[in-house]
Image (cartoon, rainbow, N blue to C red):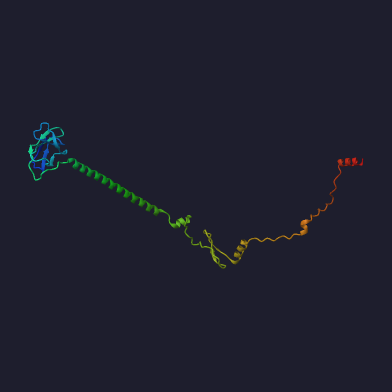
Length: 250
């Protein structure tokens, strides 16, 4: 069973210029719109509008009217129902004059504070995400560096700085029977005087002897080869030669 809906109300205490008072309102249907009007004004022209109230309660209001002002508070709820407070005459206070209430500045400051808080929260979240990303990237680099092969493994695979094999020692000059090692893991080789001499002979350049020649042999042509036995060296006379001879005899 729902509670019965009552008419809205608003209660205004006696007012003193430049001092704070408390307005009490409730019932009806929120939100509430509250205005200050001149007492007896049939049109209900608003002299000052208070901020929109979203729930029943108490509103602290600073009296910003001059002493002697006769005012009344009017209230409208969400369903259009109206309520009016008692009329009040502003009494003289300690202050000579009071500035008018500026609710816009108050609300704008609240909105600015809310916006600043939201922006600050977003910036903080962004910084946290960047920090987490950097830490994760650094951790990944450390893992990758730990998984890389060592220098010895790289040396056996032909890196730029290979590891030195125990059998790899540079060749040096020395007496016979000196243990000298080859490079590229060829193993050690034992040299003797005979093997060293053979190696030196192989390294020496070849020598050439100039052939002796006869001065006359270069100028005189060689004699003709002797005639072979049983070989006719004279040319046979042909029929053309016989005819030429007959013509000459004539």
